Amino acid sequence: MQTLDEMLTASPWAQALPPDHLQRARAAIIVRDLEPGAYVCHKGDPANVWVGVIDGLVKLSSLSDSGKSVTFAAVPANSWFGEGSVFKKEARKYDVVALRESRVALMPEATFFWLLDTSIPFNRFILTQLNERLGQFMGAFEHDRLLEPEARVARTIANMLHPQLYPGHESAIEISQDELSHLVGASRQRISQALQVLEKSGLIKVTYRMITVLDVEGLRSFGN
Image 1: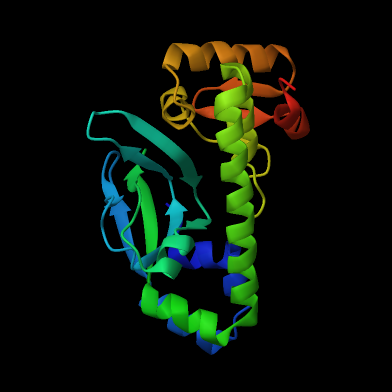
Image 2: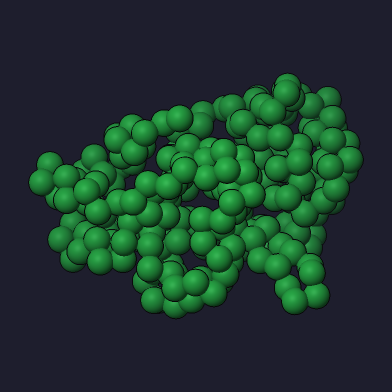
């Protein structure tokens, strides 16, 4: 599994810090290893940490009292999330669950706010992160209501290559059809059918637990 230091090397905000600031931030981060199905945090917990995925894949989801669930995002390695909840110092609005064996980084809120107070590059990174995430969620809201399942799968795959929110993945996404079904909110059979359509369209190549994107712009516009 990737280490915290390797993840920080891939994090633009970390590389923009002076060495002493980076050392202080790194020393405060808590690293946790998780088995599939384990919780990073629960809905209703205090949002007192900024979360990074060092390795693996986690999902952000919510389960209603009636048993209905919705998945907001699947977050791969080298990605950070939860800055909005930390900002507002509110109870977390979603569960964070490992979809596979994963390693996460937990930055305490005190360190998060210290970086905001002392680092202009960190501020710029967080502002861009919030703006890009808002755009992604607005797009997902629209797609969920207006698009057919094949197009929703296409947008979901394209979103996982977002260079700001999920950096360093180029064209290959390590994800199973079961994991993708959780993210899209469709059955595994429906996901399999959609992947076949996208593969026949020349947009992706599907192998075991791996989707290689051949045309990311084609995925973004599929179904328009």
